[in-house]
View 1 (tube, rainbow over the protein chains, first blue to last red):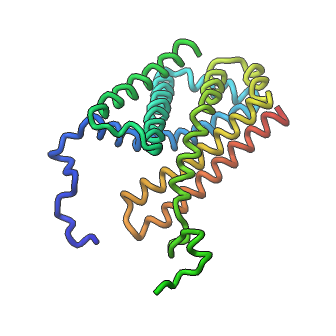
View 2: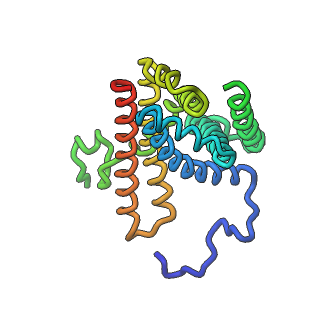
View 3: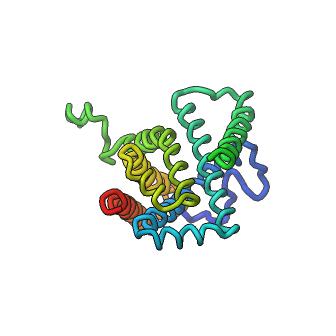
Length: 125
Length: 125
C-alpha cells in the first residue's frame, strides 16, 4: 500500500482551499477528539466532588483561573458545535437535506446555532 | 454455486462477522446524548460555581444521577467508536489494532471511574 508515498493525496491540502462544508467536516472530527479528552476532565471533576468538600473547593479554586475558564468555555463551544453538526449527520442519515444549493446555508445555521447555544449557556446558566 | 448457509443469509454477515453495528451504535448514542447534554451543562454549572452541599443535593436526586450516569457511559462509548474511526483513517496497519485496544480499554476504565465517583457521591456523599 505504501509503495508510492511521494504521490499527492486527494484532496491535496497544500493547494486545495477547503469549502465551508469541508472545514466544518474536519472541525467535527477535531472537536470529537478534543471532547474525548474532555471526558477525562469530567471524570476528574466527578472524582473531586466524590472526594469531599476539601477536594471540591480545591477544584473550584483551580477552575477560577481565567485561563482554565477560557479553556472550559472552549470545551462548551466544541461540545455544542459537535452536537449541532452531529444533528446534521443524523439528518443526512435520514436521507434529508442533501440539496447542493442549501449546503452552505445549513453550514451557517450550524455555526450560528452552536454559537447561540454557547451564549445562552454563558448568560442564563 | 451458493456456499452460504440459510442462517448466514438471514444474519447478513460476511467473513468480517460484523455488519453495521459500529456505524449504527455511533448514531444511537449520538441521538441519546443530544437531550442528555442538558443535564451535563446543569452539572458543570453547579460544580464550578455552587456551594458543595448544593451540588451534592442536585446530583443525589435520582433523575439527575441517572441522567449524568447515562450521559457519561454513552459519551465514553461514543468517544471510543469515534476515535476508532479516526485511528483507522490515519494510523498505519501495524499500530492500528493495538491503538484501538488501548482506546477501548481507556474509555471502558474511564466510564467505570466516573460511575464509581457518582456512586460514592450518591451513597456516601
